[in-house]
Length: 347
Image 1: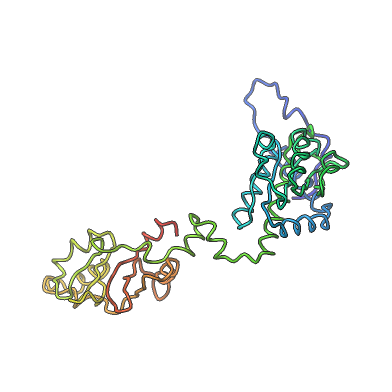
Image 2: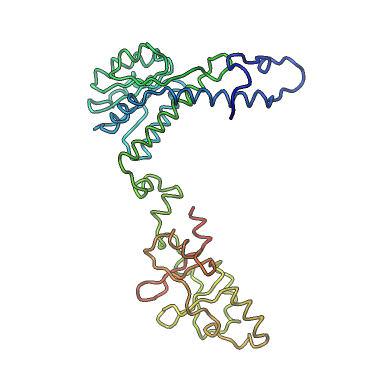
């Protein structure tokens, strides 16, 4: 983003103390300065982070035989909750422990096999200092993650990680904004390092996110999202096209599945086929059967195939289609899967 236009410690506080009766507005130069300053302070963190400390921290979490608890107060508490949730989504046993609730009974969840990670910018947070002796009495391993050197918390925990902080972007160097950004970057990056070390597969990740697009694409099968039974637009190959117009338009599939007496798939007849037939046959249209004009070599799919495979098949050359007949191993029609149905299912 380029170098700062002037010293980052010399903010123009008039931006905050504008007493003009005119409506306040954001000064573009000030806004750019704030982003450049934040970039500078984040770069300071990256350039000065002790990777050996971070490696020890990450390896300790990876080797945990119990639950990894996170705790913090205020903004650090919110960050702790988020990092814990990230780990849970990656299949790591983790939870947030409120320091206040812990002192009123919740500390009973801690055991000797657990790790308690305490996030605090200053390392002198009173609530966390009160929590430490109680957590030690439960036998948990304590790690502090702080930004001030020589703080009280680091002196009483089993291990400390220092997060280098040049200053807050706040003009008064008070509001915890840069420090919380650093905490979040640190925690989430460590989480991804754990994900890599555990060799978490895409399928395992998806299993933890069943409602998300990735999860659905790896969990949902064709049989889970297909239309079936009375929803199917069906006709016999000897049926007259003119008699099947309602079936073609009423089921919302844009097609008819043409079957024989044994319910085997003969072909498909689409609304596009209808338009082409009308244009080519003129008055002869009224004498044509569906079997005469249907596509007898349509793309098909089985019920056990993944739903995402159905979407890929629909989009494949030579031209995309909006539906696939679903047939069993005996070519008996058991359903139809549509592009609209896949999109509605979140795929």
